[in-house]
Length: 546
Image: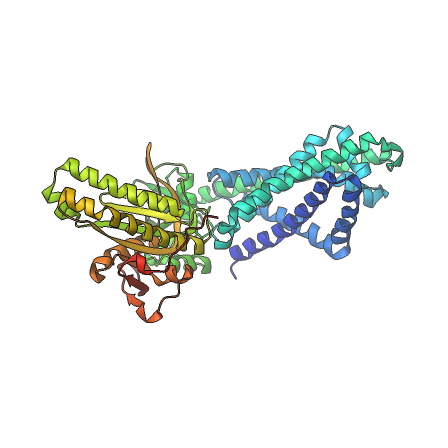
């Protein structure tokens, strides 16, 4: 296991322990909405879970390791140019220890050193009456936000997380809100019943002064460690430049010199060269990949994570991930995916979708015989039929190009539902075009036909374009394959070619012997497909919305 992989796993493991602690703590606060007594009963369970020997070692060990890894990452970072969401996570993470110091010393340390009762009946009024409510709420929000961002960065490319994103997002928003309301409700309940006599005494003057000193010392120590990490980083960068250990990277637009040990992505960011990287440099999205030229000896061997991603996108032998490649000698660099500005593009992360491609048949013949205005009318009618059918089924018709339409399903539904919706759309399209067939023959002396390709899989979904001209679309092998299947309708003389994966995921029971393996241009392996003469031959699929 490489050191970088070990570091990532340590960061994830310790972060999950801390996130679990924060989650249970907020749940405990949220019970304050029920009553102070309910929160107190839940606090006993919380203490049984976390205030024992093994849990204490695990929690504070995770805290120290997590902070240590953060400081180490701060020291090793070559540039502070990064996507804004990544910057927010780092800044929020650095603020948490500063805000945590007062809460830690006033509750856990006060209990351990002086036996001070840390029941809600004492802690809540102490925070409420001393004006520390905003500080406590800030700590609550920032700790929760930091944890949620960390979870999001780890899971955002996983199918299960994408399917349940809206549920998890709602939980991310609601839990800290309910915890804050629970805290406020407990403070009002204590004030209303005038429970001062039942509240344990706070620390004495000398003890309180000592706790304040410890709190200030913790903050000063942490800020000192951050300063040391930044100073050591500045010293390391200065030493690298002074020793002249530089590597020259020749980009298409210009050549830059960076210290040995920098990744290509860090070099791009440091010198303001636009470079896509949707996953933030974690070898997951492949958008930062570059084509390299020069001496192969200048390229260290790819890591296991890099190899896995390169194999997934079937990258050529001269393609590497910029976030992982740290050249040891001069090389040429050419990004495979071009960024048009310095901002992270609006193209979103990968998600599983169903892509429908439909093409109007006999259009060329019709174009030769009729005036442009008549052709525009026909296209408008065709687009209306397709758009209405797709919308009614639950999909999004997102591209109208020439005599073709592309539509997406699964943006708000699970994949099996999306497959059924896409098939329902093909049946609705066929039914509506059949209804217009006689009128088209009467008005234009010809009938029109169509071919549809259906495929499902991962695609990057979002907006692309230039300046104010932008369009919502999907990009990836899934989209290309769906387009190729639409072309096969001509080869098989059918109206629908659907991948076997779509048919199976939709739950349709077709004769397996009717499936055929076809070679798709751009794919290394044959793809199982069903060539279906008419979508109406398939069992009816109800376009159920979720």
